[in-house]
Image (cartoon, rainbow, N blue to C red; front, side):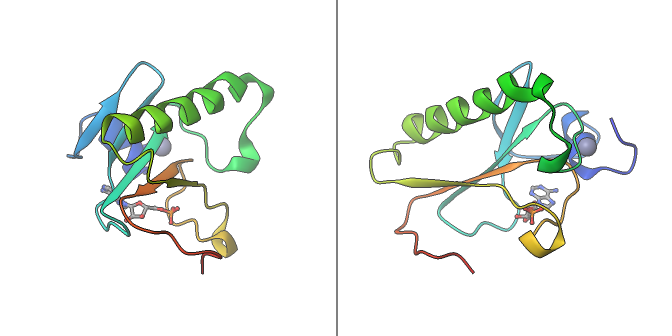
Length: 115
Ligand code: AMP
Ligand code: ZN
């Protein structure tokens, strides 16, 4: 837990978030500024600053994130049409919140490459 971290505050219930899935490892919530009809943030409960701060102790957690992303896409019925999982790392990679998270985007045709 980081006192200044907005995602830690959502996880702690100190500020609201539209949570669509949660378990002991992570939460998934609607992105406040969605870039697709389905846009969720999958966020581990553990405060990890960036992808570069992951260790081998986090391997199961990262695998779980991908499992849950597929489950959400399936349960919300956009899996078959296609979806994207995105992790932005550091400023040049587009990271704005310094608590690791994975964007799950779907519900429209997604162009490539991203900006
Ligand atoms: P990133 O640029 O990869 O760090 O993504 C941060 C994402 O968090 C952006 O898509 C924001 O719209 C989203 N975001 C920021 N604050 C909140 C919040 N309080 N609830 C939901 N999503 C948020
Ligand atoms: Zn945090």
